[in-house]
Image (cartoon, rainbow, N blue to C red; front, side, top):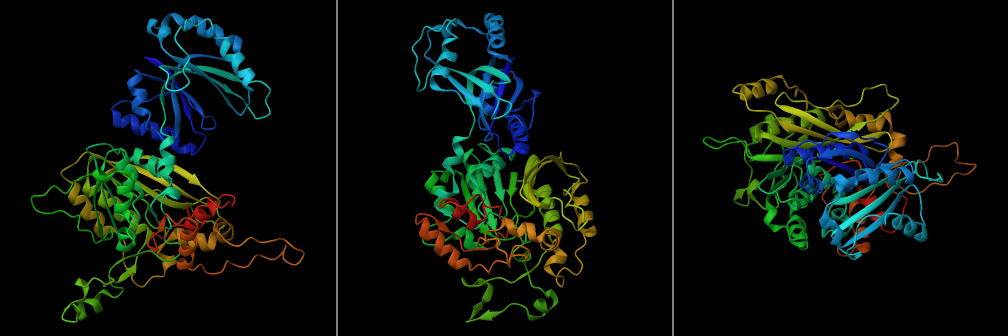
Length: 523
């Protein structure tokens, strides 16, 4: 057994431990933390061997895994602890290997001279090999943990031997600002990669995104070796234009082997369905970031007046069926947010293999003044809820919900039919968008002022005339002018003009020329 120091990135704290747990489950083992604090980047656990650490190295929210050699509140305690443990830690092969020492300070600083002094204090280690700063055989890291940025001395000091670096460098590789083709709501690379880890993306796995948009989840799942498929209600986002599309992204990243195909449908009108003699459970994972329905109400394929559409029947134009013509745009009808959640869960229960994963993003209100309860986590009797990870903004959040398909039972099909009959869909065609989407209603009625502050808009200046007057609402945004502005800034990036992924954009970072593009895109 190996005592291990896990150095986390100090970001997305609610995702960090579940991501490690998900990867460990994929590898067939568990990680029990002996010490874990969501407010600290350092955690202690015990792994069976170095192979487990290397398997966990795909974790995006981990900077590195280290064999813990010593820990102390002071350097005197650290050296005493190290000397007492050397007989069990030291291997003769270490003596002649190339090596390097590094000193890291969390919330603190050390000059180069101080770092050299710290390293020289470990001269009693029998390291006779050459010092090599690039790709050495052994890397030792001294990590100082300061309580605050104003603390004079560290509260704890660790010494560890590097086992494996985490997956942080992958974030930059798939940065959407450098991507060939993106859309208004393309998921940022970091959380998209994290989602792929929760989904157990790996070679031999078949992963499907029913709200693919510009294919961010498809790309990151293929990065880990999975074969990916995607669909969307609007084929324009999949096809792109001017040679830039979901497929061109796969080509750019060299991931064509992981591209299965894309097709146009919605979750309620899908060609993926049960057929006689064909196993309907085909997906190892389903990953999606469904539309939130804020800018406009949610819609699915179908006529608002189904009876009238049936009475009219098929439409013929210019001698052929209208729906077979390339410029045909199918009609859409209003869709309930709750019904969409239920439909996604049902689709997953039907088409996931036992143990397969559903990773679904969902928005929710945090704490508004309306008195209405926050959105509840949707459940399905055939899916086990594994984890909820929250990315909080101002008065709203989005959650990554992870489920696992339970073992199959003979009563599963009958249970799904019973759930369908019990589902309330009466009056959906005639309802208003807010009546069908509780989050949309809360957004506009419960925390409208605060949420609008999260959206990109013109800056305001407090003056004697306006300091007690609410600022006027931002002017309507013209999507095409946005796209022109973005493409003029980043000529190598194509922005999809499709607005089908109607999600609320996160609050923008402080404006800089680079982040203004992200602000417009709502990432």
